[in-house]
View (cartoon, rainbow, N blue to C red):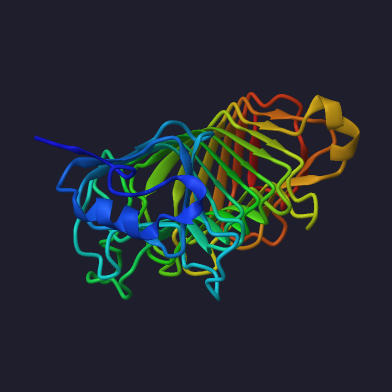
Length: 343
């Protein structure tokens, strides 16, 4: 039988003033496999990273607008906290099934990472209805340990997981999928990334094929740099999504594609995605929305919508192609001959 541990019953105040770190740690110590850790409405101040052991657990609040975990803005902790919420062990042992929802992690630049996932997370884990703001990395899929135990492919993964209805704002990088993290067939849907230096940083220095996942109805708006940089051998399926006013500070495009690590193909498939807005059509004139920075990256588009005067730039890309069907308002193409199929 599972139990629900209320952090306030363990001594947390949630008053936005008291340091609740010790009480939250004590509440976690009382949980068993598949128990729930409940944060009632309140603002929970922490002065150290909250570590969740590698066992299945539900962590939830009363809603992301009313349950908030944040570092102290008054207590001097010296260097920024390494993070607010970390799941798993640095040694990668364990494969917990997690369910996290209805709370916010507000880092205020006093915590480097909002949510850090060490090593493996069990299939069917769910993360939804949460927000993360003002971190160096909003979400970090951390492949610790390194090197992985099996050459050629990481054994440490967040695969077949559901990420839904979340909001990331004001981070250096919204989501970092780093090093040899194998993403499997996870699904990210109905989320919003804004005001970040880089929305999604997806990389694999092994350069080999590294799994596939799906992104549905992402809203990428007013990011200072690109929404996504894809590097290292992945297959990503976009369904829907709206990309507007990204790269507004750096001048970079919405999406950067390439593989500078190896020869495995990055394949980006987009269906029904929208680039730009009618209300900002003039500002979008001549802007590059998708650009290649390296080879081995293919783009497939179906029924995408483009504001007039926008550009896809794949000059310098080696062993790459574009295939597009049913596109509304064809963008300007800056591409070598023979690499584009447009219908």
